[in-house]
Length: 316
Image 1 (cartoon, rainbow, N blue to C red):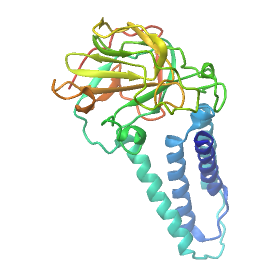
Image 2: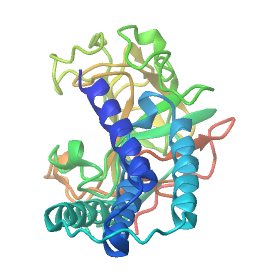
Image 3: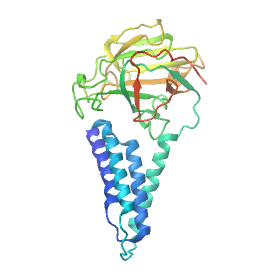
Image 4: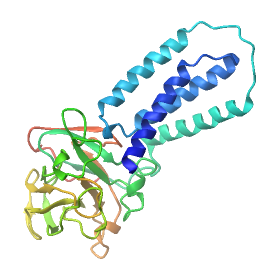
């Protein structure tokens, strides 16, 4: 199971970054600093990219504390006059991994898409609670799953966290009701006209997603300047119909697990409205902002107690 593999890899890299700091060195100060820089780069990488949410998002903060303590102890450790033993192969491996981890950590913030075509400012489509960017970012490498999907380079997958910082009751569950976001109400993030509304597709039972992307319950809203697509909605729980006018904060549907979805979540993507002759998903993708702030992979989003009135359709 990919979820268990990713969680194992997260914990393995996190543990390795701490153990490298704690290990005593007999290779001299040069090798010691190669190792320390590697530890910092790998620690930063796994803090940003680690799938902590499969266990609890609080595990990431616990790792950060443990790493900081280990780093300070390593700096304060008494130096010994041990003989220098040059091991160029091992040193080279540390340097190569440091470059890779450092590059990925920088790309986490910058992405690879450059300046976006525009920005769509939306209201948060949820009512109350802590939500989480399960997939998202500014292109590669943080949004690798969406990068080649109908030009959805800024698409986001959102889940909800419970009080323990988990997305579900277990690391992986086959019960839809175990997922915190399942059956959560989706509110309109903008005002506009419903272009399509699909509700008759059954929800997948995790991890089955054989129905594919063409069997997704969804709502597509058109504003004066862009289209907002929201998918993986619950079977027979879409409240609006094609042609309906909707306002910011209006209930649209419930979150489900229909279509090409491994577990319950909301998929949302926005495209500029530039031509009537081009399908919405082939038009320029827009970076999404909720309440005038964009979010990156694995960031938390605090939803207000009620749909915010601040959302408005802005393309800049």
